[in-house]
Length: 150
Image (cartoon, rainbow, N blue to C red; front, side):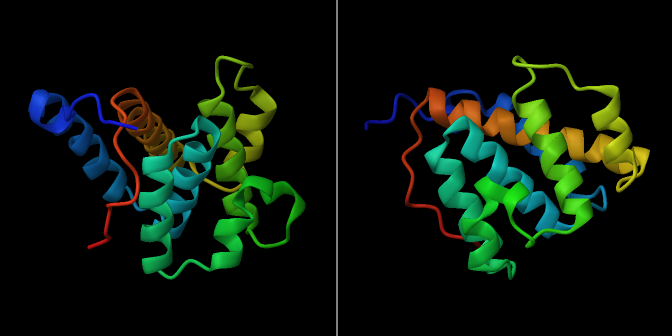
């Protein structure tokens, strides 16, 4: 698969905006492990090979277990995730698939049992960010495999 364009060079202002959103999320207080799980799960749903490659590497470097990374697409059927992580993953799936169904009051209430309102906003911004990155990488065919964690 050949890349269509390098959006980082074509539209540096757009990249700057995305990086500002990332800066907010990173400073929000959400645990890095939680954020990495969210990025991987949204990227699985969206089928973004570049982001899956990147975020699984980042998660491993940050200490995430192979078992939890491999089982993430079946998180509901495993005991490997905390209740807080489960709430975040459920919220992630609902927002990533928002065109298929509403984000229900019951889901919001269930999420609020494990994250406070400020954390839900931060999580929502994190989900918006990764879905945006997925759409950039997929649309412009960013080739997977070359990313190396810092």
